[in-house]
Image 1: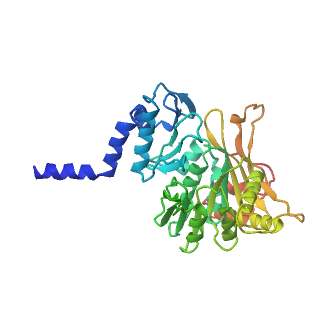
Image 2 (image 1 turned 120 degrees about the horizontal axis):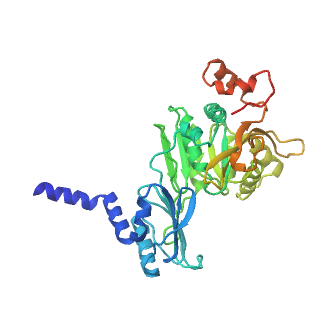
Image 3 (image 1 turned 180 degrees about the vertical axis):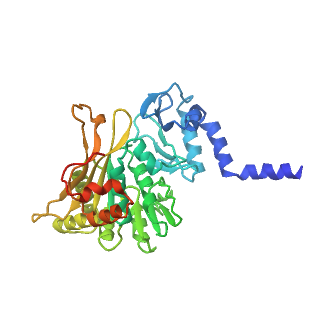
Length: 387
């Protein structure tokens, strides 16, 4: 009898069990989708319209909440469980569930169709680097090139559209960071799951009900510099913290990575420049561009295709600015269509034939018979290699 009471007490205070019961009671209409591993996102557009993303496709479901009040009650209970609350002053809320899933809530007046909630589910198991090649996200040669870049502490920016796979690829490639290094991860809502033994994860915090106590990405980044990082990973660069990031990368914090929304390497650097100008520090544009070109070594562009695949479509090295302070870049890998190919989905990430700034490191690895796929980089022939 005593054992049963202890078990019951443990169950009553177990946060995971409380959360499970909360889901069952208030999120009943979507619970099946939250439990389905093939569903990666649940989008609730008011009580009567619920979409899911499954196998890369958006699907409208038959699920619905009883009414708007029922949906609001579900949102309130979910937020209360994670320490946040609905308030007229904060109609847009980001939260992270106990299982790591990310939740975004939009309420009127910002949402004109009523209460909306989007749940990006947490992937319990990350991808392996071999899987990136198997599923066509990268070729072996491109993967080994990025491996050398990460191991030799190059700063890499992963860019692409929404849901193009930026975070997933960064998370997977981060396994190449040596295990003895101290890594500081900075995110608005924790998504990255680095497997190294020495990882410090920092997360932003919104203001309290009185508008105080907020801690943004920029504040976290500034504090991370005092935590003796070997590498800093910013989940997504989207504001004035870009200038702090740029200045840190040009002052000895190599091997860092971040993601941002951009479709081309040029767009990525231009957007980084714009965000840096949003800071409260006045800096001449020419000096800023010089710092950006010095701080970012490689830009990796991700894209999501109509067949729902997510692939790297371009890997570009950033060169010093020219005499007129314009950005200069060199494509190392680009997506190329096979002869007779018409659809972009048929393209293959191939080496452009350009020499890489990593030539010495690549040659050492190839001569050691470690990464033979990179041999074409210093071969006598100038021909473009096949992936």
